[in-house]
Length: 140
Image 1 (tube, rainbow, N blue to C red):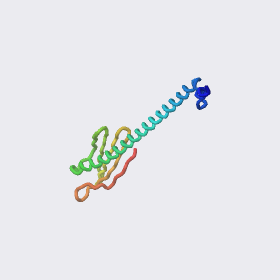
Image 2: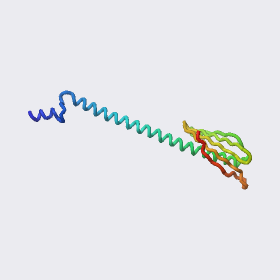
Image 3: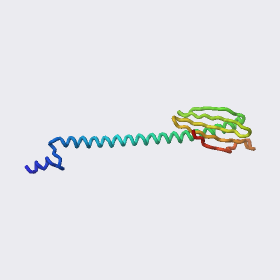
Image 4: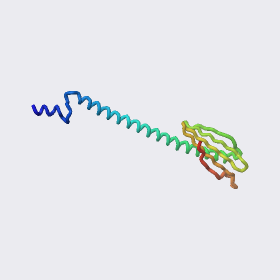
């Protein structure tokens, strides 16, 4: 009889009055809350990674726009104007402006909400090739 009585008051909880159900409900709620918080944390980390990847891609595409314009100018030194091309959901706009002996190239890359802009200044060298004399980032 004494053994039966000790089971009813294990850890000071009266097992017959419904406290076990309350304890199980509390533990289940706590574990669910931790699971939801973990999911939110992982989701926000994933968004940060995607944003950084877009930032890097747009930076490289803006740089490639400068190189593309430089290659076009190597074949046609009199080329001036604008060109736009799409590549895998990314838009690159290139503007070429001549002012005296300096050719200014502006390359803008856009992917989603991320934008990058690069400006390069080229001068036609004595060997007939364009030399990059200035390069800068432009932030919107």
